[in-house]
Length: 136
Image 1 (tube, rainbow, N blue to C red):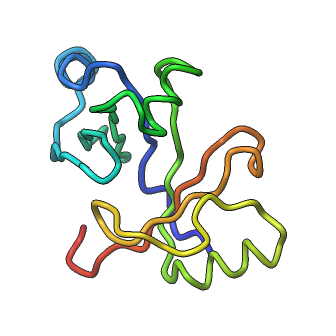
Image 2 (image 1 turned 30 degrees about the vertical axis):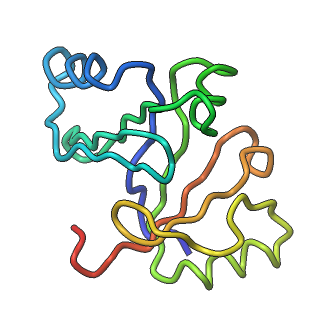
């Protein structure tokens, strides 16, 4: 079902400061920076060699990401796995009794996404991503 680890999402207070840390001090390369108004966040995708991270900062205090940050502080937010067919993957996970945040996929930055509830995966929120055909 899972093709590969696509990225690890990290929630941060200050996107600009975290980009500086990851790029200037840790040596990552900034790939893109996007505003995701429907999620009330800004995000930056960074290349770490054989892996990608997504830095996520809330733009508002009412979003789920803002609540996550307030409750847990900065750190790992989710682990994203690429799938070929997100609807089939969600159906399989539901049949296996896993609690989902999204029972149907929604539009994400790089394709269709859906999330598995962290309580279903021992504290880790898992994102499924079916990439758009033009995404790399």
